[in-house]
Length: 226
Image 1 (cartoon, rainbow, N blue to C red):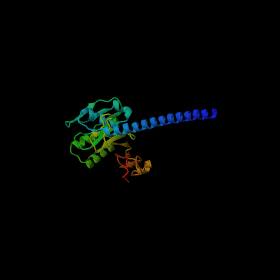
Image 2: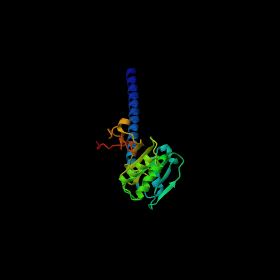
Image 3: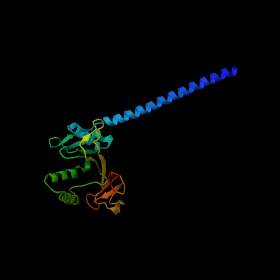
Image 4: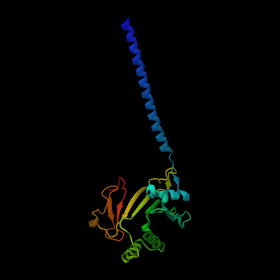
């Protein structure tokens, strides 16, 4: 009789433990499902909006700048009316050239302020109707004469993509990516050891080697690029 009672007590304890364990597992599984469901809902609900205001234009263009420098960048570019303006003055070494809202796609740039004379000269010549090749030749001559100067190592960051919509919570532009440029005037493949084309995504290579516009490129390549 004593053995029978003991067996009944042990069976009760085992049933209680199993029930508790099953209950905990069910709770964990339910929590995991809820978390996945919330993430899917969040991704589904994420809506990209058109860049229709000056505030949105500035905020999305600032994505071209390093994150910890965005608050102090000077921002220039074309406003919604097509006028080239200074949106705000800066406090650090960066200038952001905002996306042109009157052109298709998105293309904003952030560069070191010491590059501004070179960049501004390009905009001036373009406004005069000069072609790409003419601008290249004129600025090359002005670099050789000393009228223009680029200190080796100055950087340009380009935030670009095919769309003109953005996430209003993060200011990220839909499908936009970053490309980096490090100016090295007159550098060559031989003087840098860099290839003339990228060997893999985000690998550096040298573009326009031997010219005043020689620069190191770091471009993100899509999976389809070879």
